[in-house]
Length: 83
Image (cartoon, rainbow, N blue to C red; front, top):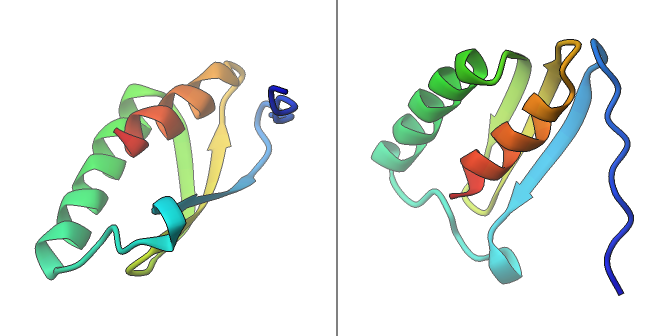
């Protein structure tokens, strides 16, 4: 059974959590953290999403993101960040 689609509101902050599979480590060394932040900066501009806060941990990431009027940017950015 497919999961229920998330509700995304334009111009409203959303708390996003990204985890590794089975809570595996996704950011192991300093360069991993730096690469993630670099990618986050690039994608926020590409998908027109504001980044209010982030918390990077070894096995998961918390993000406070706000899409503009085009709410699809939030989903596209989230999908791109997981790749």
